[in-house]
Length: 143
Image (cartoon, rainbow, N blue to C red; front, side, top):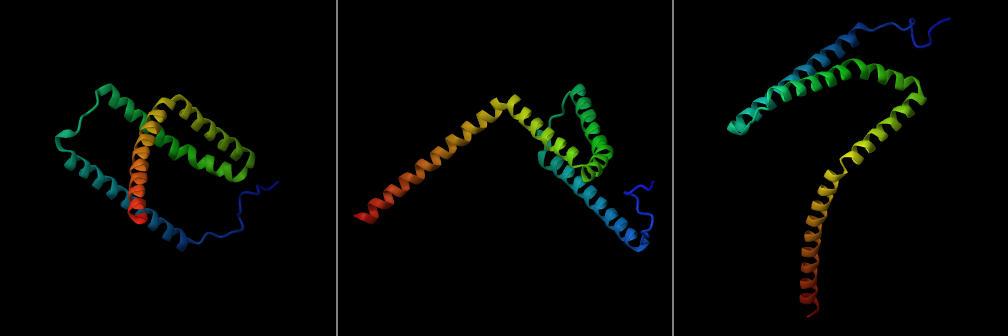
């Protein structure tokens, strides 16, 4: 039985693959230059205001970032290929993502409530100022 996902009869055009590789190299150079320039800008503009975390927090942060990078490099391409094949798996991933997002919102709702209250107070002041301005304009127009 033949694997339906493998297309041996299609030839590989080396010219287009070389173009894709050159674009990928250019994109990689652009990403690294951007990261380097942002890092230099942060160090130059922040000056003495930068604070370094303690050693254990720095190691924990580096391990967390390293884990995320490994996940993105190895698991995401496989997951994306599987999502192209299976609609059921796609539905499970979407529902799981929504559940994870809802869990984060529920566990950190006090943070969101504080931000919501702050934004509603700011918007309330802005609306009151706008209503006051409209009342003053209506008095000027009607008199």
